[in-house]
Length: 313
Image 1 (tube, rainbow, N blue to C red):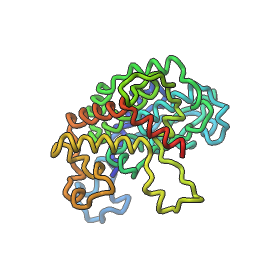
Image 2: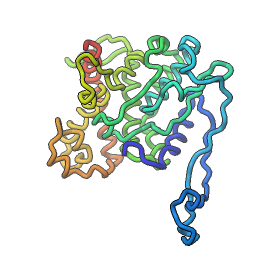
Image 3: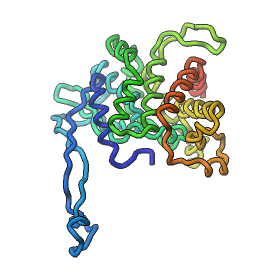
Image 4: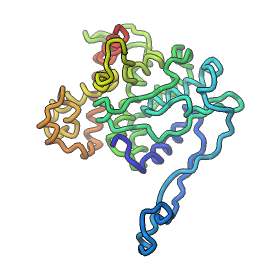
């Protein structure tokens, strides 16, 4: 599965660490002993050991609010507030940022909630079987220049240090890779200069948050020319870039990078896919190699090319 049951709290703790981008409300993790008889799992003759289990969950601190963002027009919100939420969502590849998951405080501040469906498996992202959802993507403040203090914060992010935090929390390596790739894209896209394919530095405007969202979300189908079954094959630019990175890793490190094989084979070679261990996790060393190749693809202008193609369609 793209999101493992029981790992959501650990990802939420990481989001609390990243709260310099967006104000997250308190999250606690109590252990609770619950009789499974109460939900009909066992009969009255089951042993005490069988009838109880330690369940781990979260308790969210109540946040006073006046509804959700979907109840308001986007001009209601402070530009920097919107951008803070956007930066958080991009870094965590949030697949569930709809209008109901952004509360509005009495002071009209945005309060992001419900972060269980973040940092999915990088291989699921590459296949296009899971995609980002950013409700703010079309808001006006996503198209404006990012606040200087936020831009500085982004450029000061230490990708490897954050990956270390995720590993300490027990987040799967394939999910750590998603956060590393998303953050690398964010840092690269907000720089005013990029490296062109000819090897020469070329002047280029930084991407807006809207541009990044367009690149990370699957394209909207044109229902006049597209059937519902065809939409299943459409991937985001981000997914395409990750797929290209995995293809290169498989070429450069045969055997070592087989964990990425199902995502690296174009159109799917059934024999190769069946031979790969899809449950195997990449090692931290392979994740590091993945990040290096992903960043090389960014510097080569691959992301800019894919975005330009998507915008012209």
